[in-house]
Each structure stands twice: as C-alpha cells, then as structure tokens.
Length: 322
Image (cartoon, rainbow, N blue to C red; front, side, top):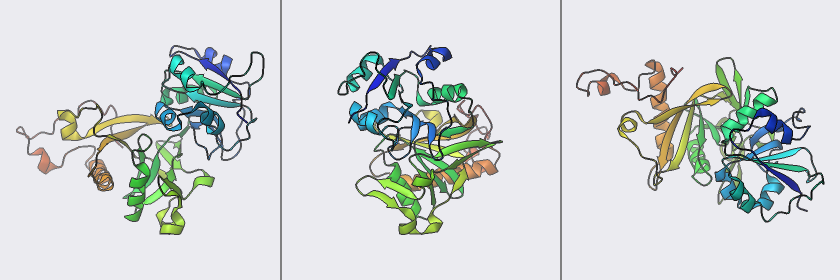
C-alpha cells in the first residue's frame, strides 16, 4: 500500500517559523537507538527526516519508491515521517511525485514532503538548529581509514565510490562506514562511525552487499576515526574546469561538517584513471603537508619557481589546516 502524503514548497528565504509551521508536531521528539533524526535517504536506516538530493532523485526516479523507502525500514503508517527534497523547484517536484496520489484535503497523512531550493548542508544546519542539536552530522559517502587518515569519499550515485573502497580494502586500508557515516564533533575534532546494523557491510553495484569481515578479516574494519579529509569524485567530462591554480595546488576547498571545517579535495574520474592509487597519493600529500605546517609544496618543488618562494594558496583555504 502506498502511503499518502502532503507536499509543501518553501523558498530559500523562508523563515524558521515557516519551517516550524509545516513540520509535524512530533518531529523534535527523541529518536530510538540507531535511528537518525536528519540524514540522506537510506532504505536500511530509519530516518525521521530523509534528505533527497537531485542525484538521489535521479537514482530513485519514482515518487512512489521515494515514499516507500526514503525513511528506511519503517511501517508505512509510522509517524512522523518527513521527506526533504533539496535543490528542488516546485514544478519539477510536482512532476516527480505525480505517480503518487496526495492525501485528500483534511485527511491526516503519515508523510510530509517538503521541497526547497536549498542544498542538503543548508537544510541540515537549519533543522539541527531548530531541534537544538548541532554536533551530529550524517553524510552520504564511504568513510575509510587510508594510510592512517580518516577520509570521506563522496560522489554522485554510480561514480564508483564502492568500487574504489573495495580496491582500497584489498590494498590493506580499512572500512569504517559505507553509505551513511555519522559524524560527531568532540572538541576540535570530528569523529565518524557507522550505524550498528551496517557496520562491516559494503554495497557494490553488480555484486550486492558484501560482508567485509568475512571476505578480508577483522583487520579490514575500524569502528571510528577522526575525519581529516573529504575527497569528492566527479566525472572528468563534466563542465567543471581546472584552472592554473588547481594545476599547481590541486582542486581544493573546505566544508563544515558537525560545525568544524574539513579540507576537501576534488578528483576527476575518467576511464583508465586508477582512483585508488590517486587517493593514496592525495592522503600521502595531505600527511606531508600537515608535517610541513600546511605548506602545499616540498622545498624541491618550491625551488622551481623563479623567486624561490611558495606562491600563496588561491583562497580556497580560509582556515589553517590542522
């Protein structure tokens, strides 16, 4: 049976009171153990407020499937359930949800669908503020320990995150969480871990769900790790251009997770590129830069420049790397 729903569209300039007015009264109540309050839609983890980005919408392709599985393995009449369609415009959302009948006027619907032009991070920050939590942050991606460094590997559905993770595991690195890592701020550090029901499992397209402990042994897994780097994978044939600064320093930036700034490295994916080897090189480079106090070049590379000085980093790094 397809659950009924109500749909509300909120513009980017909507106030906190506008959000509170359409969220179910019980959405701020405590959540059971191993359930998220806010996080990306995942059919394996109960989530009270499920975020569905444009990439996930393209993967689901159907409003009916969204309503059935976005909030995880919950009974159809479980309430409150909220589905948040981010980076969405009202007309596109109406077309996407067209296969599913809306609730009749005046009827109570177990699912509230909200669409907004804001992105996942903006929506998450607002909702965490509204419910009084700031230190927990759920992200979509594969969280791994690579050469001792906690690295979150992200990218659109089908880009090859799980395949890269599987190759890294076979090379001796360790899996922490696939698909739904949870990050919590503790002082000046962000710690990432995996929901209990998913710990040690890795989904690979064309193979299915793998039990990494059975395949590679207990040493291939780690329960938690400090998050020190994010690597975003994107298609090399996309419209993103790599300028002169990116050629020198790498395509970098920063992003706030659980309220703290984390370095980001963007890596193009193309046939023939060994992404696992490139990830290992990025991690080694990151570790060396930390040892050099944040300098992106070795002294030998710095001497290649005519004045012998290391050029300033091109503005992507507003805070010192720790």
